[in-house]
Image (tube, rainbow, N blue to C red; front, side, top):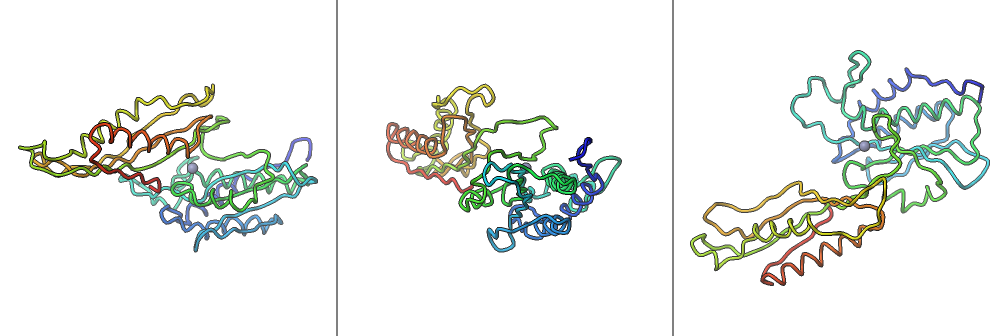
Length: 299
Ligand SMILES: [Zn+2]
């Protein structure tokens, strides 16, 4: 590396971001393969070794590597190719065109996080062109399915390709602040099945709405066990969607809530899921023992 370090091609960052935005990777369904090849072709053209991991049809993870002297302790630059669907009203520009307005690019995923992927790819090219040879491998990963489903992260973990990783930098937008820690998340839907009746004789029914309301309060005030952590704080619960009931004069026999719990150090997905389930079941049993419930964590 020269005394001033490798020079960054800013125009290349803009054009790669625009090209990536042109590839509609709205998830669902994702269809990230074209975007992976667009970026991979550019890196390969610059002499960087690339490979692809096929996760599902039309969904491929891009891996690029600057080889180091040592086999372990690699540094990974990571990001996701998929974006959330551009269904919000009020778009004044085509979300998949990446229109330049002043010094801003407007389009779906310019910030989250095709701009980040383009910046990391160009940084890698700059390092390679400067003749820099890292101590351990420098690996660039453009993954799939981050906005929903996490299929890319699961595939990467199962494939073991990042086994030797010592450091991982995620290029998510954080306003250029360094974000050294991130809480985990458990997303699930709870469905309560009660028994319907006419509202004139509610004692003949079991209100699914009432049960779920009480269970939500219980969950929101539950003291989950966790380890104190200065960066991450405490776990938290958010009830995002609730659906149930038909009419004011009918005891509702079904109600569901989709919610998320943010996890911190000292908690695992399995433990929290078990806790929710046992807590929930016990609540049901104590109160009447006549309802059924279902937890669906695939939402
Ligand atoms: Zn993101």
